[in-house]
Image (cartoon, rainbow, N blue to C red; front, side, top):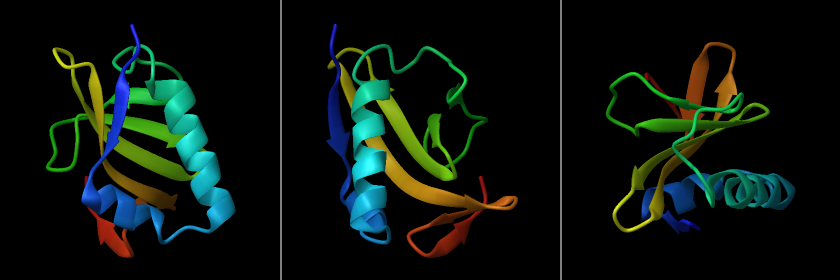
Length: 98
């Protein structure tokens, strides 16, 4: 079963921080990795500890995609997109604690 990918307004604004090339890499990987079985943990996909951003994290090199999944509607809701810098995550130009 295929899942529909839905980007929140915030996540779309987060993407604008990146270059066109980086945006293409992020969006392509999201489509490849999250269209099928987005809740199955993998090397690059994990369930996170409780936080205010999202339940799941997808790693794409130093980029991080935070998302929730609606199993009933088969929708992957992209909540935030950021970049890992050392031990910190920068989302939309701001450092966020997860």
